[in-house]
Image (cartoon, one colour):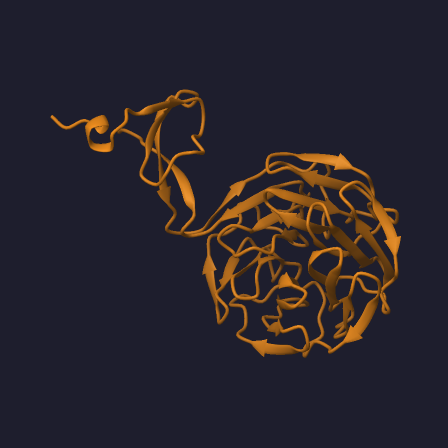
Length: 318
């Protein structure tokens, strides 16, 4: 009679919890859960619950990935609070120097930026993994805008209220005005880095998407569902747009392949004014933080795993 050891060359391993070292097709016994599990490859993307913020808020700014992220500012009111994510839980760290909501940010968990907010604030701050430092202001104060960038040495700030088309580029020292958006809007989503990015959605049900090539914006294919206050993550050729508000609070998630948008799995918590983070491809980077729900601000965090990523499956019996 054939056995697992005979076929595979090793016995079923006993592990207390998820066996992160398992390879595709490997079986193990999870002694904590009391079940057999195995590693497979996902055929569709899905959201999973992440660590909960210490403070419920909305229209915050963020930076980093789902393994190491930063969340700062927001409402209700004007908040200076900053929280750091280690892939499991959030910890409060040093606050912004200027409390603000309706703000934007970009970068990583160790090298981030925050710019604009409130009623057209131009204030800019940079994060060095320990604290925030005020640096040169935006040329034009912005609120309800979006930010794009991989660290504190380069960034793009664009859009805002009311129907702002202005775009500014950060070079590590100061902001310069560059070519405008084709369609001015506020509460838009974004993905990518300062030299290759996309923006999408905004205002009252806008579906418009534009691509940035470090010089100018080009209109490309629209979102399937127009909404404002949505989150974004990924790159300019492999992105996610999620949440927002159309005529209802949205949980819808759309995936961008560099050419068009496709609807995929919904967020567990439908929300508006949420923060998206991550500028890796959309199979690994999607990270939805905070937001406003029909019941008020939420501290909920959700993490996206896309198709083709390793996942743990549990064997069940009936």
